Amino acid sequence: MAQTPNPAFQGSFAIRPAKPPELERWAPPMAYLIAMLLVVIGCLQPPLVAAGPSRLQVAEAMFAERCKTAGEKIHRSAENVEGVFLMKTRPKEINFRDQFRMDDPYGADVTGEGYIVVFLQGKDAKGSVVEQGGVTSGYRYVEAIDPIDGKRYRYTGSMKVVGQKDAAAPNIQIELKRNPSYDLKIYAYKLDRVAATGTAPRYGVTYDDISTREEREYWIAGSSLKVIDLQKNEVMAERIGYMMDRGQGAQSGGRSPWLLAEFHACPAFPKAPGGHPFKGYQTRNFVEKILKPKQEE
Image 1 (cartoon, rainbow, N blue to C red):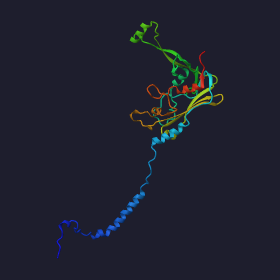
Image 2 (spheres, helix red, strand yellow):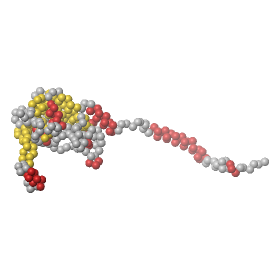
Image 3 (tube, rainbow, N blue to C red):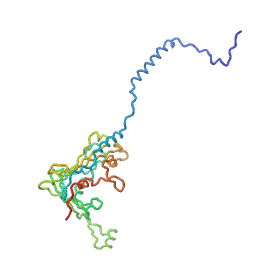
Image 4 (cartoon, one colour):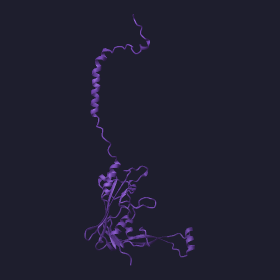
């Protein structure tokens, strides 16, 4: 007796049309070709490797290694030194962002003639250089070679009148009422220069940029500051310093890489009241540890 198909199962056992003979013929070769293509693509892909250190990590590791040699080495000192020979002077401009200019960004503190002036001025009780009235005096003279004419000059300095205050100004009127003998002259510390004669001073001060190309690639600047006994051709003391820009040269928003590198230095710079590192007078401060200026009698 014939059975009537159950309608509930007709969908599951629906008869599918047979594959065309052409597809039946091509199916195995096509599957093989696809599999081989995947193997070839897989061979062309580079092997998976762990991500390497970031640029900043490489720079930090290099900087930490350099800092192992940083610091001051003082072999001997000298008392009652009257004058020093600045074997190099500082340029007038400040290097804020030139990555490969080997001009010692770490050691750069005072520019132009100011670099000479600070060696001649006195210091106050806190160690800051002052124009006059300090508790210690500076060196009595400084000699240096003018990079323009190549000649050696002797520099001295003193406070001189450079102008006159406006007696009609309201604040000056107040001062004159308080003190009729109030000085209306304007003073400033000025250099005097004459051609040097005889031999140069016994003690010399010089600096060098000791950065390598590789270090500058990672925005690391190295510095050497030396005090030399020129009679004996002997290094009396040396300070090695490094600094690194953690922004790796980024200049967006007017950013100055070498200026910000001062926050990441070894030895670290003292902090100014606003919190920014203060580099001013660092050369003279180091030199005075070795070459003690002769004090006024």
